Length: 199
Image (cartoon, rainbow, N blue to C red; front, side):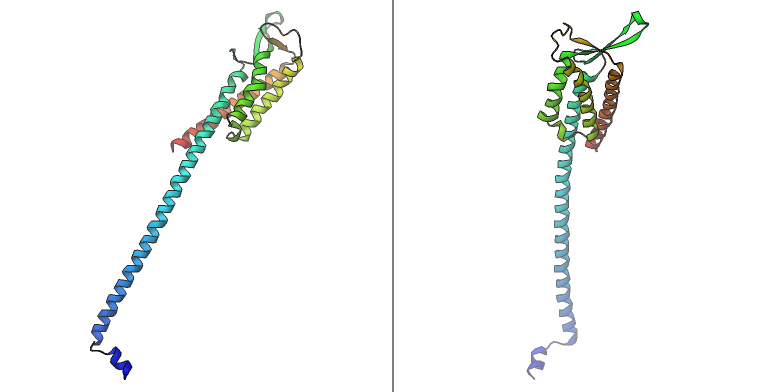
């Protein structure tokens, strides 16, 4: 009797259906708002991570570009074009019918091998941001070139113009090949980084 009077206090079935519908509608609204809030929160978090990751990626690309540009600066030493920094010099020997004679510039070689490469690689942190291929070519050049330096380091008669003849032209040709490969690779990697940074 208690149960019947408690539940049946004057409401007929249609009123119960209307009341149930209102409660169900309110419940659906609360769930929908909860789902919308959850989705909005996840979207905001993903966007925040995306923005954060994009910022980190852009910073990394800028550092890689700076490192590659620093290595690019070393090409002035590695080029066989005549300049104040060039290590390799050459000239045609007119007495032998135009044979190419190669020389290395002792002071430029010393500057490159003992100072510049280390400064770029370690002090400017390029070593952290260049590819293994660039590193291998750079140090391949340095390793081959430094043999000239150590072969004449203790010479008491370094010419006034600092040019010392390279007796084996194959060594100079190897240095030129490494320079060409490094020049090409640096251009490719710089163009890739510039393109990735602008996307």
